[in-house]
Amino acid sequence: MQPVILITGANGSVGRALVEHLFAERAPAELILLVRRDGREFPNAWLDLPVRIIEGDIGLADLGQSGNEAARLRREIRVIVHGAADTRFNAPYETLERTNVTGTERVLAFAHGCPGLEKFIHLSTTCVAGKRTGVIPEAPLSDETGFVNGYERTKWEAERKVFAASLPVQIVRLSTVVGSQRDGRIPRWGAAHLTLYFLYRGLIAMVPGYPDSTLDFISSELAARIIAAAALQPGRRVPVLHACAGPDAAPLNEFLDFMIARFAVVHPGWARGAFIRPPIVDELTFRLFQESVALSRDLLFNQILACTQSFLPSLLYPKICSTTNAAGMLGMRLPTPPWRQLAGKVIDHWLATNWARPKDRESTHACIDRT
View 1 (tube, rainbow, N blue to C red):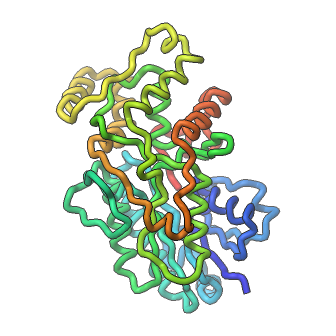
View 2: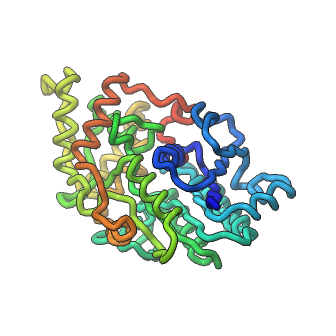
View 3: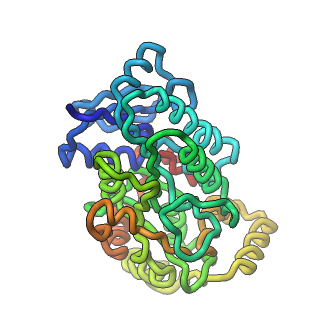
């Protein structure tokens, strides 16, 4: 009998990639996809798949289902993949907490009533490392070093709730999912995408960081593959898996040079030297720059700063995420494409579509990446 998997946040960026992967691989599972009642569309192709799509809300008791429906779902479900989250780096803390912490508590409460539950897979982020530096283990983390923004803190708090639950839990921490390694397609813009767009336009004056700072990003295919393996593989369950580039992450200096070289091919400002590569600066210099922009009252640069200041400062805390557990689960080194290859695919897609944003109602709002 095939296991029944409930996926929350199924119409988010990672959720969509996961559903596509499970069907492409003909995974031996029945899928129930929980989507929000907010008008966000899901792919029309899903209507032709043998899936059940239910509307719901992780902020409500029983995920917004009626008593009879909730009871029926609980009897059926064997695996829960909890992917619904608010991933806006600059959203108000209370808003992030409502979805990322309280919402997770609601899903855990629902899971406690599932008598046949075999696994609870919680999708988290490597950002829970916050201001830690060095090697980040695939293990529970404390909050002793603090966090760069409210998103990081609320996702860490959600992890704490998951670890405390008396359930068969496993956490998959994702680094930045930038797009498809096949065609560069981007389901939804996030803070990293918006920052690159501003860089393309020559509007990033400086980048905080250090020579050993890295940018860890992965493809949607790799994220989906690791989540699917965690959900489907029986047997021993390690508490935390990292779906990230780890030691293969892009060095900040090299990444900037690569991006600007690609931009110079198509953008006259970069081609003729009208734009210059932003310098990498320390924390004090970047803070003084932020203060000067605020005092200038320049609307454009204040908007750019508001969209990037919750993302860029994370580069001040160089780290490498371990991938030992994830590689052990797959039985191989993580198949991460070379960062130049993946970044090149994404940039080519952007340029081919003239930087058009995905047709998602939330994607029109600067700095939003909600899954």
